[in-house]
Length: 306
Image (cartoon, rainbow, N blue to C red):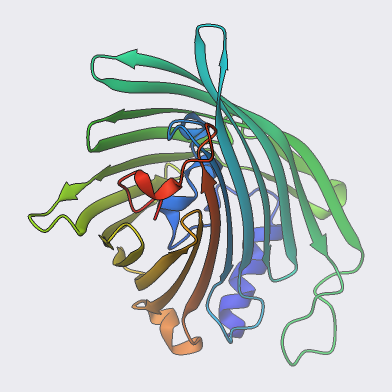
């Protein structure tokens, strides 16, 4: 465990960090605005989603992530578009990251589908707490508190045609630098995302099957999450996600009064790190509604909206 934490220290306070993965989620299909601003407003309704993730439970200094995102369509004359907002707090060891971003997406009809082009921008604050200690150690890693803020932005494309969705995006486009003077330097490495899903209506109209995938890379490593979810009666869903060489997730959820949804997920580690923790746990809460006459969200056939 100490060896693992020491690795985190070296990665965080070295003179330059050559890349660090963004937080990942079992419910990545419900949180697309946070990594692809082009998703904003594409579902034609107002969506608010909150996710809380406790990763590697039982491991001191393990990541704890909370994210809230919201998006909705807007029309200005003949211009169809969408707006979104994401607020993220991600804590790991002595490091705490906070970001807040506003997104805008321009929608274009392409054939029978919808193409969205989006961009977001906002602030990213990285705080390093010098009072944090190794487990069972008497002294702090280093003294003092360091906090730096930088402007951050992302861009992306999103295409939806029939039952198929495709997304391509990049976060930390400008790779903003954070200079802690004598304590060292770091920067936010650019990350690249590809997402896709396809809704499969089954012979029994009460069931819908949706396989999906998200690929994430910082240019040096690649992470792939492959999910398959089943929606029953537009109200209850369950699914399984495999993350390459890292974890296997089981997730489930249901809707309450049509517009509210609740989901939980548990990840079983499959890497060597599984011996040091009790897995990862995630909770998702969401609220979705139509702008016109308060139409219920479950009329949309997708595990994204129960």
